Image 1 (tube, rainbow, N blue to C red):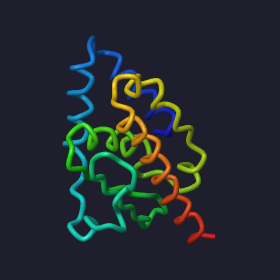
Image 2 (image 1 turned 180 degrees about the vertical axis):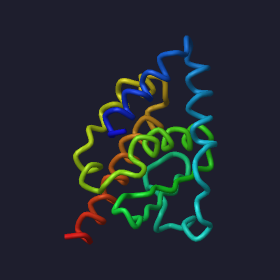
Image 3 (image 1 turned 90 degrees about the vertical axis):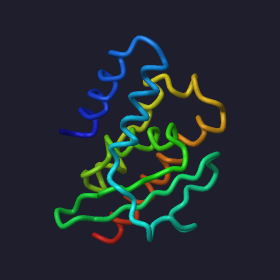
Length: 141
């Protein structure tokens, strides 16, 4: 499934919920399903700076040339927010990640229902994930 298809599927899944409480529960549930973040990645080098909560992000290039993301947060909603990005970008090539339109997050409506600092965190998360992909892209060339 392509990144665009994963984004569409995620938006469809969110559209089934009638109110924001249900949507938040869904997003938090995505966070709970994230693969565990290695303890060695819970350090300042993997911390996304500028987020209200602590958010750690790590990535690895697997043998197929695809990026695997690992993330965690000390906040359930923030962990769910980064899980949205992991859901659509995980196991994709660095080039596909770099070309991905991250504006799908606007269509979720989450930004309008978050405090400004948490809404800003969404942009920081997307930027950091693209940065990791860029690093892997340079390694392969």
